[in-house]
Image (cartoon, rainbow over all chains, first blue to last red; front, side):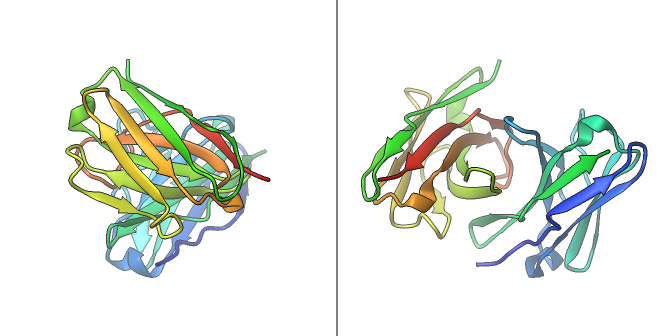
Length: 106
Length: 119
């Protein structure tokens, strides 16, 4: 099996930029998706294929990759962006989530 | 509108079995593959299993392989998860989620059902 590692928490002031990293050996060959989960709610997709944004997701959400690390960036963070964020990927018929990052906007 | 409604959760003793259901409506269920994903209290997401739209392909996460079985009944628009030999560490909210094209996708999610494994 393989692992995807994220920082446990990231804090950002409103209007500033938050960056959440996701690291793992498979990320050099497999793309990543990012989910946002707010308390008591099911997750929603915010980024797919490392950097693509689904329709309806604000432009302040962006993704990038470098080697075996991918990054979710929230530019101009808003209070409503406070949530848990999970990266995930798949290989060998196995889907793996990252460890999750709690983003606090204050 | 699209709805996925999980049911069947509850409190069960270690070693016992439980079957979860996920009732789908508002979309063509037989065209979608389906996942089960779980989340232990206060913890992160963990992928459990996936089944293709025609039930021909099934894959499982390492922690449930050999104990859990995913299945579906397209005539009833329902997904199932048979959970055997339950362990305390299986305690979690269990979500079902659908995908249309790419199995590494979650197009729609249910709201989850809580399974508590405790003596």
